Length: 455
Image (tube, rainbow, N blue to C red):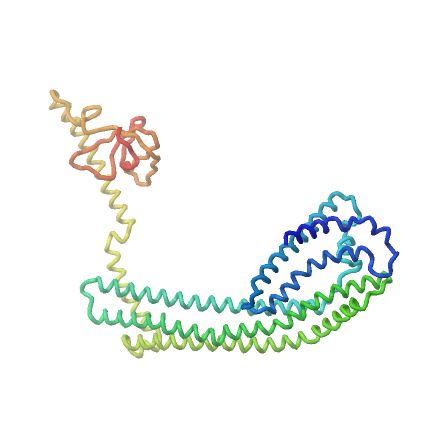
């Protein structure tokens, strides 16, 4: 493939520059030299189509299947490289402006055409609908897969909830035997749903939905091959039109290929609307199968839940959810009253009380400092007291390692590098906080110990 890539790439760069083209212009009643020179380029670009067709008709178990797949991949890379070289060459010539063939006519001549490509508006509309129908079926398959995945996630969550209930009630003392029995029944039902119903849902979806979607998509294969053949024949049809516009006579094989395009196009325009009528009926059957699967599944779900509710809450509760919701709301309101009386369940109350306590401790500490200072100045003049010294024995200095910006009033706002004098009371040691004073500003407050390093 590397040899093919190298040779054809060089040829594509230079074949249009052949000087003999102008000399032979008008000297032949057959194809002109440009049409012959473009043949190798067109031929190498048809190789991927040929190999793809052979690979499609080759059984996956055949010995040559893997080699064909590898060859197809490599020849497609060669074709892409040739197209990229051609595109770059066109862009360079357009920018440089040395040649006059950089307009749209040059692109037509590069493919052998001097006329506009054939456009059949009716067929193009039918072909668009053909592609849209296939995409709609594939999207339906993806939607069904998403629905099944959602159901299985619901089963998993239900099973996990049952396990959590069982674990919680089993570890909680004083739970009545009846309550544990209810939890066990709920766990059994959750396990049944996640195992039995999930398996039954998979079987129904495969039998009534996925298999029909696969058969539906196969219906499009033969028309798709005819449409592909039409696109190939259209190239020869446009070439014949081009030659006749110049007064040339196409050869027999080329004319037959162009005539085949006309026949194939007419057949597609006539039969595609009939094909769409059949696919619409098939699609209705497919949707009906999906509706059957969903209806059956939700009836089974309703039956299991009704059985559980009747067993523990009675037939009246099973006929509707009003009584269950009313009873739940009453129990919830009673529980909410009890929960409102527990402070640790409400962080805002806890923080407020903690702040009040911290403020009280801080005021007490300051009052103690003041009392000790007064006592030392009036009574203990022979021996300095703990607080009256500039740096008492229990005080020490530390450096702040990180910026700290607290929200509480009793905390100290410090920055990295600040020096603090920490006031420590042996009777009230806090393992997480130090109370200190910034040397430069004399502001005091609490700082986290892990934000400081003792000097």
